Image (tube, rainbow, N blue to C red):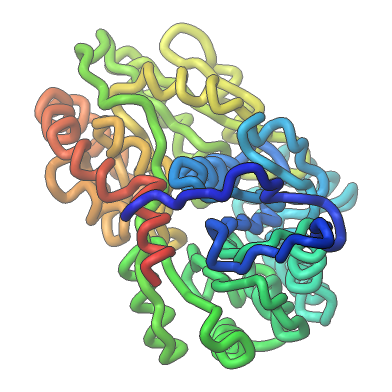
Length: 445
């Protein structure tokens, strides 16, 4: 696709309420300017997760084509963290997901439960999570999500003479439902929504007044001709298409990583658990894995932020890992900058992703996508999207969390073969899952 040719000598993004033109000039038409890409990401509140990487990648791909961009982040986000080359406005008060929010009561309950004997704590934790989910959804299912109105307000606050293409790559059911009460400005040529979690997840976590299928159908009717639905895996696209009867197209993942690994495997190999301590990511499985395989491998664990508000089972596992830290086990706490994250990936020989297959299912994994782009083999759960992605010999899929240790051993025993396959497949994966490929798909629709 030929690059857009931006109009020179004109401010393409202004914070004025309306453009100001000389008396003898005619305002340019929408087709005389490259369309602006507006990335609406209410979940971009900090460095945690893949919100920032996703938004940065697609913004820079658009700018490389001559398209101006505007990144709308959460009000709490520091605009400078997006990069000097990206116009970022911390804007949304509305949250992407409220399910993780918690106050002093939750912190006290979770901290206390984490000190109970393991058998009792294992029963208390799920009960606390269920109660928290019911309470959060009680509030989430009442009218009040403001994503739609805040998006429209931002487009009016930061207008542009040409057309806008809006991308919402991470939004909840409640966020989408709030589009019912707004009329998109005429400048919006298209609104692209990328669905990244299965319907039952979206109904359970920050659901709207209706089922997500009904929400999407109403949005498609209200914004007919301008709303385009996508999913970041083929399986997810099929799930939503079947549930709604609407067109839902799969789109690539915007993976941006350093070149494919070429160096020798470490002695011992470096095994990384990345992405932060969460139950669905299998963080609680790590202490016995490290105890059994320490020495066979050097473990690097990126725990992220673990505090009194973390799940009791996670807190207990984290204390065990901290107590065992030393030669053969390094714990990285807190959130990482893009540079620190890239440096961490550069050390890795095997990616350990002991995720819950039931929790992930058709969902994608940005970390696995990065591993495949770098040529790093991975240990992943069987029976989900991740297992399909390593089916060409780029990793090992485990079927039972009780036996994951043996599958990791198998991966270590065959690591040279797995690494060769992963590196051979990496160029094709990178070409298919790149920011530019994603942008091409969005513009084509």
